[in-house]
Length: 81
View: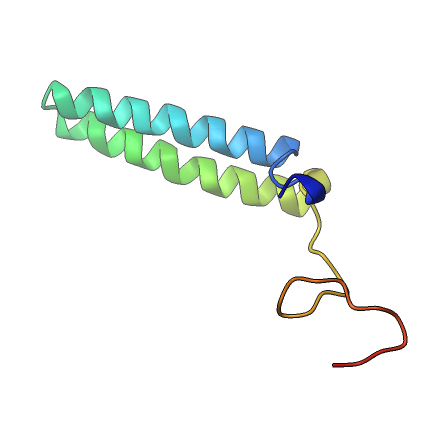
């Protein structure tokens, strides 16, 4: 995974940070038995995923790889599978 820069983008870091904060909020409100707070934390977690996808669509994420086979190996030019 280190060879393809997996997760080393602004979109990935932002999305994961928001999701982590949402889970912490939901966990805290679970302990203090406040269902509205748990719901708010879960909504915040879902929003983190949406923000990450929107940032990727805006060009702040890693693009999809091209020229790959199903096994994930780059295919030499001039050869077909």
